[in-house]
Image (tube, rainbow, N blue to C red):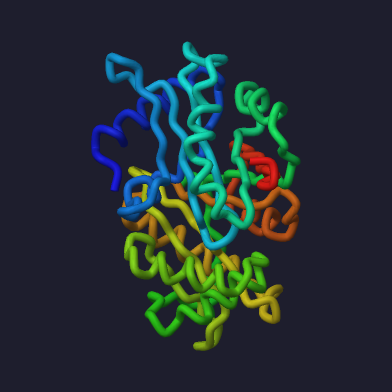
Length: 279
């Protein structure tokens, strides 16, 4: 578990870096606030006065390990991030695959990546929906219910068939989310039968949607649109003004669905696969 002082330092450095480069860093704040004990997922570099100069974070979401980080603009080109990366090596050696996340328009991130054994993998759009947008009509046959422990098998199945996550990794991830209890997960039902899933995270005055998937054989029936609209309405009824989600840039079907529900892209995150054989 990260200490409050560490979280404050991360937030402060994030704001400085984002303002300097006009970027959006993806630091997965819900995960940072709920780090498991006994794992070295966060690495810090402070100066002698206790000022945070560099930070590196590791994440596992049921698939490849992801890495993100930042260095204070006034202290770049000093090897700080390279040193943090070196310190993370024991954890990285356990990964089956490593993806490094960088905002698409971050010159400093691209400068680091170009000197590393990395290859571009894919891009992801971050999208948001403002409360002023009109909500799509909901099909009454589409309902949401809270997931229960016996749903873990179905949740993992959807992750495997919809996101190509290996079955065992999907099972491990969903068990971790379930035990954490910090990310409400809903089962989407169509006519009273399991049809999909959706998971949400809270971040200040915003809600993030993750793991949204509809059983492939049921896609094309408007189930996803109705489920998404219900989540948006539920959050707005709670006073949440902004709802966010992420979608792979090449997933044209999902992108079209989200746009039709009032979501608009505002940031692009690029992912690069690191050659673990060259650690």
